[in-house]
Amino acid sequence: MNYITRAIELAATHSRSGINGPFGAVIVKNNSVIGEGWNRVVELNDPSAHAEINAIRNACQHIKSPILTDSVLYTSCEPCPMCLSAAFWARIDTIVYACDRIDADKIGFDDNNIYQELQIGNIEKKIKLIQQQQEEGRVVFTNWENNKNKIMY
Amino acid sequence: MNYITRAIELAATHSRSGINGPFGAVIVKNNSVIGEGWNRVVELNDPSAHAEINAIRNACQHIKSPILTDSVLYTSCEPCPMCLSAAFWARIDTIVYACDRIDADKIGFDDNNIYQELQIGNIEKKIKLIQQQQEEGRVVFTNWENNKNKIMY
Image 1: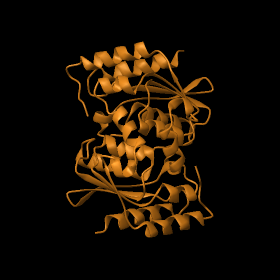
Image 2: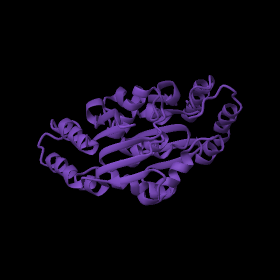
Image 3: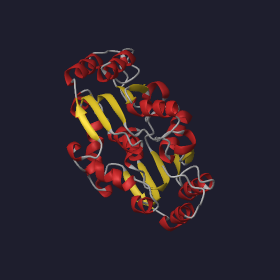
């Protein structure tokens, strides 16, 4: 099976109604599909419900782990920074994509703008970032560091 | 109410068992809390279940929209690139945070490494990125562009 064709097919099928954005994704490990996803942002009122995040969540439920080492993410479009970062957190090995951030920009999606926002310093970003009560926050981190029952991921 | 104190309190309470990472978040709109979240990555086997993503999803369910214009995200730690990008997608206005990516790095979390991965080109990244079948992908985008029923977000 051609997995990138499958990702494109998911994008086509689930965006036909106009409710879900035109994005699909498949996760493959040891030559088997362990997860699939498509964009459901508007359908679910969830801005994180991109195809890749949904495929990652689906695969993780399937293998009962938040870690997808040795897996490949096939996606109909280059992941946005949210989904790319999720792939890093999941320890995905390789991403294969069809369209890219420029193609997405041309049909009105913000992927490329958000990539640019991540390239610049916090003070320059459009979203306002303010640091407060750092010392109080650090107390929780120190307690975590000393917690003998903690599970790292 | 001090919302950053509430975010830190969520981080402390929900990480005490050692199962959930030490992160908490609150979303405020028009002086009311519309969403709360805490890290549940290990508990739910979901690498996207960071405090901020969970708070955003919770707030969006509450107001029945994927868009959180004029909202403030209070978080016990500077959002990682996944959560920061989710805040951009949700059109959040301001982020207030206590600890930062350097504090998170010191207790073993990858936020700072992932920020660095996003600063460099795709070819240099640790995750392998391969583009394939772009023209086939673009057909879905063109169909979407011409779809009169499409809902943009």
